[in-house]
Image 1: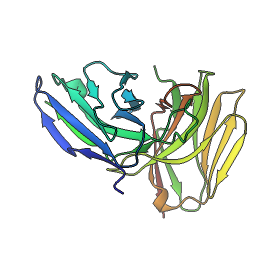
Image 2 (image 1 turned 120 degrees about the vertical axis):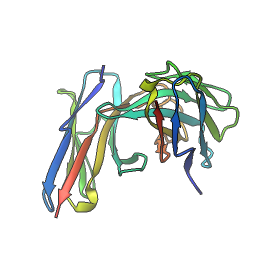
Image 3 (image 1 turned 90 degrees about the vertical axis):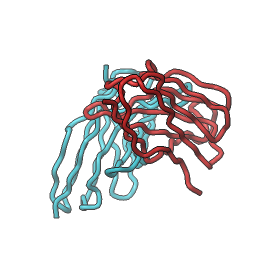
Length: 117
Length: 113
């Protein structure tokens, strides 16, 4: 049971390049989340998904897109990377949400450190 | 705008001492307050959480104190150990929706032997 895994672990992009971050979970969780962590800012929610085929915006969605084609995977895309997107990106998953009546504890992956030059 | 304010930014405590981290919020729709522990190079992990219907929750050496009227909550680590050295985040979420968490800015705790 690997929990939540993220690939890649590190990446350096040039301004304007695109890339996709992959998050995978093997806990059969319905809900998945993408956060970014910046010094002095804590973690901020980018996008989330409440089930396969669904996505929704979080606090800081601009410049990112997401897809949840399979229940176990949640992809975060940067179409045209900017230096302001230099950050550590964390994926998380939970069995349910606050209104689902199920456990809503979030389990986090190890993170992807992205640098945009 | 930071919905959950956390202090201090960093904290140094002697082994065996008490570590105290404070958080405050304004949004009265928040009703779930977890604390996360993060070691370098790792993702955050849930440490302990509280709902506002109780004023205190204890799990081992970790205690959350909650003051609903003041909209403040704090984490107390008793008998702090060098292995507790990590960054701690408080967070909050609302009753409805997907449990979207609003995090504080984090406190880097160092416990010196």
